[in-house]
Image (tube, rainbow over all chains, first blue to last red; front, side, top):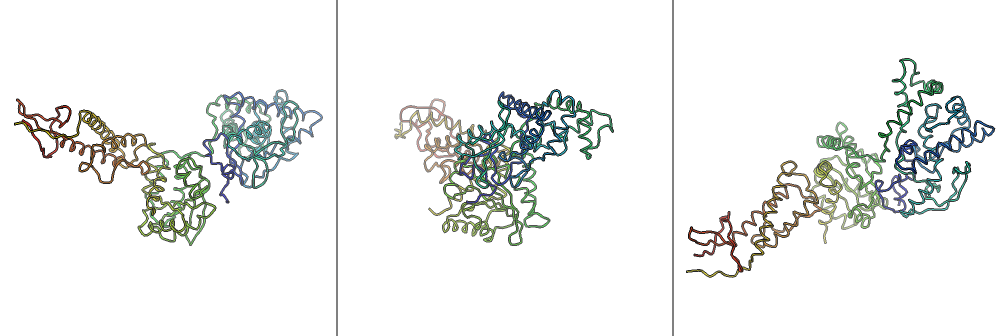
Length: 457
Length: 142
């Protein structure tokens, strides 16, 4: 069975939703668009996290000290090796393949740190500071440096989580593990989950460490620096190399910024992998949908699809994790499919997977006045092994009687189930999302129950 | 001359249970009425529906045909997400039928002050208020 945007758990038929596990569930064919922010470890109330932050800083400063002596080439090679952590699967890469920094860039990092007397004498306190000093080092590198320096912990964490959930693991070789006692990097054979598409080991990363943008970041620094200095002193943001050079010579401004950010640490929270839209936004989207005409005049179909995608992804969370929205053209009409992971979180979702084999649920959106047989046939074509034998048609008006009969006949002949969600259902979903009296997913359950009752016994 | 009462199968305990159901149904009706004013089409919560169904189930034991309020209706199906106005309508129907049922179980007793109303009980006598329905009363005692 081919899954759309497969996740490690879904691939192994382990039905857990993202909300109920403590790690970010890795995608098999792309990276998670979040980064490890070392500041979250630093500010954590957990002694384990703060100790891990200390070990990151200690390791980094050790590498820097190594580079100050005769072993500069070794230090450069270590920095290069640390600069990419493919096993973590974080970042923006579509193919899960990142690149390491060059030896030249490693030399530049060491050279820049050498040129700052404060760093020379005390080392760095926050690894994120390198972003503010060296061109080409961004949030992805900081995240990769951190993951590599924490690899030993992440291996243990991944093994523990896999054991808890029953995720299969295999013995694999994993390199660049920093050993704090010998201050050396080692390669070990460990039991880790494997990406079945690339046959490479995966590391599970705690959700509590992840952010879209690090707390200490270049944009915030620039705003801070502009406030703290007289106009014209700070080079323009567009001239980043000049600005970074300015920072090296004015390291006090950098440390001042970091102290300010440390004071604001209470506001630094991890970013969720999915965030529901607020109630007011859901209401606005619903009122946009309600006023839309049917058909494709003035891009009404596109507006309908965009709004439905956002609203349903939020309304069904956390019971169904949103997987993907797809655009394609079929018989001249632009169609957006929504695909959700079936996390088996409710009794009827469990029934769906057992009866119809729907590990992912496909939603077909139709901004039409009336559903026709063509629309049913189109969705029916998707209901293969990939999506199981249950699909949902999201449309504007209740389906006519002859189509309802058609849906029952489809079940009778092929045991396929097509549920219909209309504007009325959507209105109820938004209403219960607002009132919190019910879960919006129960409206989908109602459609399912009503459909099953229509079937001949 | 005193008319001899037929056995009705109704006891004091039944009347006590009836009162409890009636009072609670009235209160539920008031509560749901408030909700319904704000969100008539909003789905009622699972928690509230559980109590509504509990009272309907108890009332159904009394309201056998011809007093059954709604044909083919026993209790609400949780999976169909009944709305506040649906629940309001059904509770109102039940309340009316409970009163109708009560009317059928009463008798008017003449006394020195005129007359008063009593339950037709097999084991006891309990005075009650005048029925609010126009039902015909088949027995009257002097």
